[in-house]
Image (cartoon, rainbow, N blue to C red):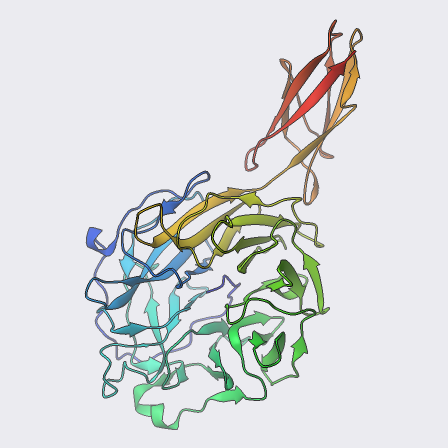
Length: 469
């Protein structure tokens, strides 16, 4: 479900494959539109379920790959895939599974390898019959070597299991996929893949001293951690599972959204960071230091999502109950400074979860299942731009005299250079410290002056200056 930095090679798989999917057509839900700011764009005409979050993975070229589950009229299911380019252009939509399955689990997890190939981990049943290898035998995998246009399903499992549900995946430092799932009995995982012929002797690692709900794996610093919620202990924990099993580390506070998958990323220079809802507030949990940092303006959220960029910036998004609009904020490249208030997006009906993804420190994409009024639930996406703020010194002065005003434009990282400041027919451009000056003429009477600040990649901001008596 969660965007993670995946830097490992694809483990070898068997050559026994289901037939690959055909090149996508309009019947596969092809829209090829554009994801932009200001409104939600449906990624597909296919119907989704409101509890099935998307999974997003970022490729080395900046392409964001998105996979989600769809419902068919005959009550079978499939997964669909599309791409969002760095400029926001949506690519074609393709079916992931060559045939529709009778049951599919959610959430699923998607990985991108250095060679550009994709791996989707999921659980399900192709026909409901336990006699079929593709029914309740384990965590299955779909692979694509052409950027998601076509897919194949090897006759192998990533984790042996007879249950259906969600799944999480990361990569070890040796390049092997590590895949697992949590339940009331603990967390269960395996390294690499097991072909059908060796399934009976497959070994599954696990810990059972905690129940592990909403579990998510993350690779960081050569080790792999799982972050999960224990319903019995009413707490969130992080625990190393590779190369050795470590002791659990409990997060501060009480996580208030039971069983909701936990979003966790590897932040460069920091390590694993998770987005939690603690006492009704969204916080960022720095697992290495076991400290939390609040995100302003996201009180009352039902769930939160994180995306990390190579330069250390974070994007955090939240979604909530009816009437709670999806929203997003940006965190500075270093430290924990966050936007003063989040950008709020138009609400959709029947939303349940949100996933945030980003390839640019100045822009992120939010992906949610939802519907416009009266429409069925579909997967939607919308872009969010970075925020900046402006201060003026002085912000008011008396009529009858000229006044030089210094403007300072900042964002979460400090001064914003290259911002255009316009007011009363005059303009200036901010320097490296985010400052510039405008000299206003002497106005004979009181008035208000509107200041507008713009810069590529940022939401425009306005400020009022006041000339008083």
